[in-house]
Image (cartoon, rainbow, N blue to C red):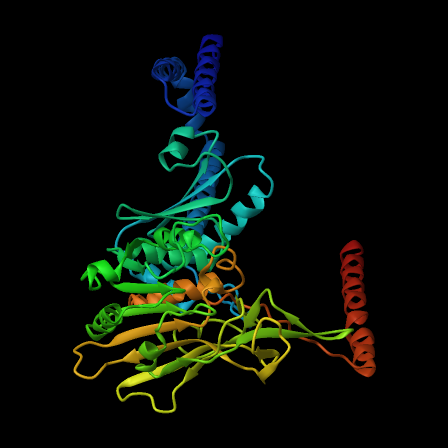
Length: 509
């Protein structure tokens, strides 16, 4: 090859390399790169043209032909391996051998992902260098991979807030890491906790095509849905519902005279004062037309709703339920919270596992009538445990009985001469919904499950967290010795001896 040909070839190689490096550094294709690429290709063409005779002689020798045949075989092998890897990445089967199926999506998640008709966009916002961000990212990738294994329509995008501030501003993200948005057909939902429960609930929200209208009654000393400061306020509940695509409104039955036609769920949250007969009639008329209602009781309430719930086979007993604890000094009463861990098989509570509980504050016990009206079914969905006791007052000096006691019940069915089925959910305490206790233990999940059930959205029922179970391997002293001298020690010794024998045979063959 002549010196001129070598120089042109080197210049062409340098030009092509410079073009590639510039593209990687800048991250985008700039106009000057076309000029650099064109000059490099032109130099390459001139070099080949000048040395065409040398190149022809090189490619016609036996050594070159054999080398090219070997190269073609290597390229073919690489192509086959790449194809096998591609097929394996797109089509594979996983097996979950864990007893609790920790690596498998729940049936609800599988059902929701199977309903996707278009791409589901999942956007993860983070800040580089933030504490724990890398661990959160890896955990979220592992979680979303399970969804992507079910449907290729699940798409994931990571956005660094500092590198793409315009995108972050579009979503209203200004700081923080691990914030996730789920989008589908223009509907968006935000989650802040990386787990299957939150992600599946978000998917269910964006799949829902319409919002559910919820009315809260007022005018009887009910809990205030706008109160953010007081622990008894319901501002956190309002925010939670609106975040799950419920339209929250208020209504005064004394002035309206009836429940609005667009009301899908009616909430009476801890009334203190008496309901007029016309208002009670409006509540009953709402249920007769197939309404869904939540009633939370208030300690010392004078709401006059005892006779109302008795029509559905329920009553509220006198007294307060408190948790009794065993201490070194004897039994003590915990007046701050009353846990309840007895859940029925009803769809609202069947997802909750053992060892989980809700917390309320001194609820009054609910009782199911021995003569429930015909056509109505009552399910006691939440009960306290045997460590709870019923007291006459807050002095806790006089015990009226030992648990368990019912603190939440659902009455459903059809009233006489009614056309549609109703659903009435009664809670024995209003603090359960309050700002202080809403996010304690399972309270939030039970609240969302209740609203989902009343709005006939069974696919929104929260998923029970999977409990990690341990597999015990018990060995007696004899079995341990057998394992140690029969397997643990002989096996590596046998491998070492085999390796030495093979080395000796090859060394002196």
